[in-house]
Amino acid sequence: MTDTSTVSATKFIAIDGPAGSGKSSVSKAVARTLGYGYLDTGSAYRALAWHVLAQGADTDDAAAVRAAAADFPVRLGLDPDDRTVRVGEADVTEAIREPRVSGAVSGVARVPEVRAQVNELFRALVAAAPYPAVVVEGRDITTVVAPDAPVRILLTAAPEVRAARRAGELAGENAAAVAAALHQRDASDSAVVDFLNAAEGVEVVDSTALDFPQTIDAVLAVIERLQGAHRG
Ligand SMILES: Nc1ncnc2c1ncn2[C@@H]1O[C@H](COP(=O)(O)OP(=O)(O)OP(=O)(O)O)[C@@H](O)[C@H]1O
Ligand SMILES: Nc1ccn([C@@H]2O[C@H](COP(=O)(O)O)[C@@H](O)[C@H]2O)c(=O)n1
Image (tube, rainbow, N blue to C red; front, side, top):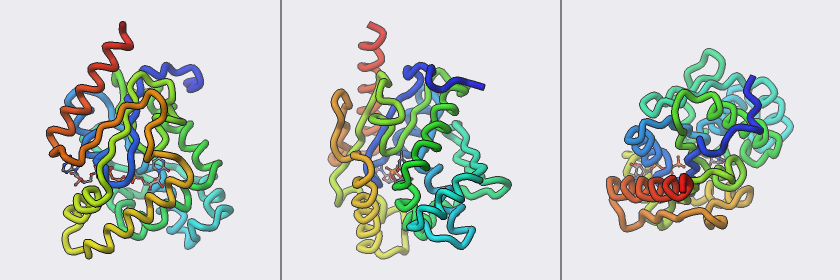
C-alpha cells in the first residue's frame, strides 16, 4: 500500500475556486492538453451526500453522515474523458449533479472526519496515478490537500458571471433560483474552507472577462511558468 504521507507533492496541479468558476471544465481541458490525470474532488463529497440521502438520512445530521462515511465504497477515476462515479455497484454519475444533491452536499462537507477521510483518498489516488501529474480541483486543494504543490491556482470569476454560466447550463431552470442556490452553497462552504481568497503563493486566474479558451490558455501559462520555476 502506498504511504501517502511521503508522496511527492509535485504530482499535484492544485486548483481551487467557488461554485461555477469553471474548475471542472477548465481542469479537464488542461489535463487533456498536458496528458495528465484529472480528479474532481467535489464528486466524492457529492457521492457521499447521495449515499446519505439514499439511506433516507439528512446531511445536516453529522452522526448520520459519519455513519454513512464509515461504509462508503466510492470509486473515482482519473481519466479526464470519463467522469464515471460509483458507490458500490451504483453508477451515480448523473444523480450526484441533481439539485437535491447540490443542495445537500455542504452538510457532508462540514464534517471534519469526512474531510480527513476523503483527503486521504485523494492523496492515495494521486500517488497511484498512472500519469506524470494530476489536475486536482476543489475547494481546499491549494491549502489543505496539497499545500506544497508547485502549481497552485485559485480560479475565480465575478459571482454574477458564475451564476449566469451555471444558469446557461441548466436550461429550463429558473435563473434566479440557480443563482441563489449557487450563492447559498458558496456561503455554506466558505464557512468551512476559504476558497474566495488566495493563500500565500497561490496564483489567481480571474476568468470574469475571459472566454473559455482564453481561460484554459491562462491556466496553462501559469502551469508552464510555475513548473519551470520549480525545475529551476
Ligand atoms: N471562461 C469561461 N467562459 C465562459 N464559460 C465558462 C468559462 N469557464 C467555465 N465556463 C462554463 O461555466 C460553467 C460552469 O463551469 P464548471 O462546471 O466547470 O464550474 P465548477 O467551478 O466546476 O462548478 P462547481 O463547483 O459548481 O462544480 C460551464 O458551463 C462551463 O463551460
Ligand atoms: N475540495 C472540496 C471539493 C468539494 N467540496 C464540497 O463538495 C461540494 C461539491 O463540489 P463541486 O466542486 O462539485 O461543486 C462543494 O459545494 C463543497 O461542499 C469541498 O468541501 N471540498
